[in-house]
Image (tube, rainbow, N blue to C red; front, side, top):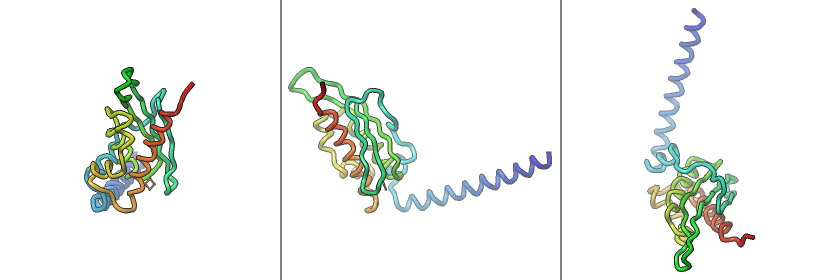
Length: 159
Ligand code: FES
């Protein structure tokens, strides 16, 4: 019984230490990143894979991190209308900023035609996030490069 209490005490000491550490990290992050970036990084949307993606790509950025994007595209039977992206998922092993960029770009492309989506740029992501520090601009570029590669994969002729 006594031992249990001791371990409980050390558990709560550890919890407190962890909480303080997390609060400290969050404070530092708030000085560097916008509120929207932190929101997207901590609660990203559209993380994962699609079962049978119409377009898929995995790209490695200059930092060595990778991003994967899957697209589900609704083919439009009428020739005068472009195919529409109806779902989009991403996975990254990159930094928090890349998670935020993946979350934003997958939201941006949903409901857009393939043509419209191919016109997105890193600035489109930065506009939503309210900017990123200079050293994280390449993370937005990684998200856009991956999207473009997934669109190129979608456009590849199939048997
Ligand atoms: Fe590599 Fe952000 S994706 S540092």
